[in-house]
Amino acid sequence: MSFPENFVWGTAAASYQIEGAAAVDGKGPSVWDMLCRKEGAVYDGNTGEVACDHYHRYAEDVGLLKSMNVKAYRLSISWPRVLPTGTGPSNEAGLDFYDRLIDALLAAGITPWVTLFHWDFPLELYYQGGWLNRDSADWFAEYATVVARRLGDRVTHWMTLNEPQVYINAGHLEGRHAPGDKLAFHEVLRAAHNTLRAHGRGVQALRAMSPGPCRVGYAPASHPKVPASDAPADVEAARRAFFATTGKHLATMSWWLDPVFLGKYPEDAWSYFGRDVPHVLAGDLELISQPVDFFGVNIYAGDRIRATPGGGFERVPFPPGHPRTAFNWPIVPEAMYHTTRFCHDRYKKPIVITENGISCTDSVDLDGRVRDPLRIDFTRRYLLQLERAIDAGVPVEGYFHWSFIDNFEWADGYKQRFGLVHCDYATGTRTPKDSSKWYAEVIRTNGASLRAGG
Image (cartoon, rainbow, N blue to C red; front, side, top):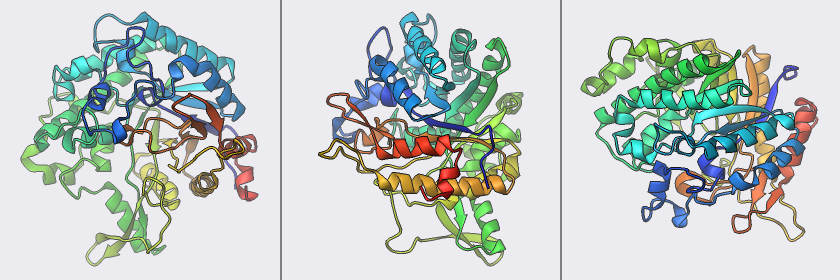
């Protein structure tokens, strides 16, 4: 049992969640800046105006990353920091910031893995229809071109979109996330189709503008399903449930994966959604299914599934007292094994875990230390299940722990702490948690310390 010799150990964060400087140096507003001004939309009135102030403290943060032995850091670019109105003239100060950050990472021996879009959509483009506007794919391509032209000489690992099913479902159907809309379902499906088209245009732009070879991927969320038992019937029921369409929502894996990796929408979803399905023009699916090099997937919780007579499946409740995170998400380590197996079996792509982590109620002790044993235990359990998948033949290339530092957790504001590093938001003080030292040892030993009990 072992992780591959060249396994990529990393950690991750996102622009709006840590950068702050929301209206500094020419940055334009995003839909999250808008939502944070809406009364009651974000926990306790929190905003991303300052966040972790990473924009000004990036050098300190890179030093912390280096102390954790990470080989790679997954970051995202703020679209409105680069293009304040989403299209048109670029903002040199914003591009200069990413130049400095990328250079600092490389000088520290850390490979940047860059996500183009992690939810901070330019507000001016939202006013022009946002993802409902078919032109949004072209807007995204323009943005991707600007970023790749500037950073492509140093960045060779890219992701187009982060968790499109979340920002479409939560932001356009449920109204919980930015932009806070509750659209008709046919409009939600149109926005989803355009965001998939934007992914394809983004892939094209990254490849066109990169001066040398680059690897391009896609980082959807997952809604893991695990079998209620080891019985083959339950395993296959969990697989069916993972890809099935079960309601008028877009927390549906196959809707977001089949067009990208198979070049077609899933038949069960297309049939289920009926007259609400989007208008697909000639060439759309060819665009969406541009070849990618890896399948990034974010894995956190999961549902237990068992088989029912006639080839069906049903969700099985967790037993009373089942462990949960501070976010009230069930802790389901085997989600790591089954999700990677199911995805590789269906799509045949190398897999990178682009997010995995846990929210805990961390605080700095009187002695100045942050003890977070639950995060250590959680991560160890999930990584052992990831190793199990690798041993079963799943080509997993890397793991990015979410997150590097406590940050703005969207509608939950600063209530949830996912970081390996504690952030005192009032002062900006960073305190590495016990988990950061533990993870540094996992990386140093390429995972061997997981099996040693630590």
